[in-house]
Image (tube, rainbow, N blue to C red):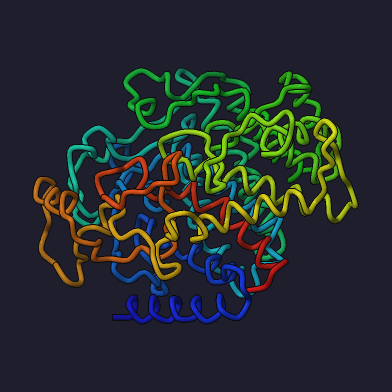
Length: 479
């Protein structure tokens, strides 16, 4: 009942404020985008848990390796914990707060809580056993053969790790980035916690540099089927060192960046796998103009009217990079656009793409277009954020959202029995407020069918960068 009341209040507030401001209600969408993370929590839930149809889960995680790995987030609609995308989620939540926290208003504490739930878990993965970094909990292959609530899961909670013998510089570099970024957020609020985060970040980064290798190459690891490090591990070394440089101010980390050979290299991607553009823009906007040329080349590859653009857009105006889950790229890249727009406005800086002048307004307009599309200003007139607007996805690919909760169905739902809910044509009984799904196809079409995982599954790494863009737009256009 409490969840339903919260949902109705948020929906009514959204309707009224959209009418008042004439723009999507960015403040309401921000609140919901952060609330989503409570629906993804693993572990023992706190008394102030607001998504009340979820309950405790994964309470024995890590026991297979005689360590404690409870907590953290399920990355999407399944019940496995993958450290690689989770660490990226934590990094982007932290960067969102660092860059746009002043525009989060009363949501700042909730954003910090979402960040801390993730950073607490990453600390466990890096300190639970000497010489190891734990990178996954739960057998992802067995998980695909089951459809059950996390509160019921009886699939193997297999523990995966990297070590000196079987390294994982990619996941270690991303974990170091996440812990370093989080340490900046908590520096004033909780100094001791910040120091702990930084201490472990340094240790993990040292491991990433000393023992090089892709974590998905570890023998017996199923990670590559689900989260391969397609871009290799060099970009994570660059990304992790960039965050450690900003957090520590030690030139050692900045000098190390030069050894990685990314000067004069550009890309048109940014995601949980490919961090190059993120690091270049991070450094450029935090007082290091050394990588400004690369950062602006990235923007020229994204802007639709740029002569050097390599980015496709749908007829409805949505950036379209790759299937599946195209919105993961849209939200990540839009965060970079928003952040660089803010930097350009504050520094009174412009640049050119060929003979096209690019201003802060140019980037802000593009960022707004992408966010507005997600919130319902699109050919489908459908909000791709659950619980936002009058029309939004009803059949998202998400186990705990699609199966009646423990409150209404306390008896165990078995692995096989759960597929009845996956294949059902009914709307999900539990509303995962704030969840952003994979999104439409290249023709702006979206079929609201639960089994269409590529388009209907929400993930933490879609939402995390969107938090920052929503805060940015709320600060400009109001709530």
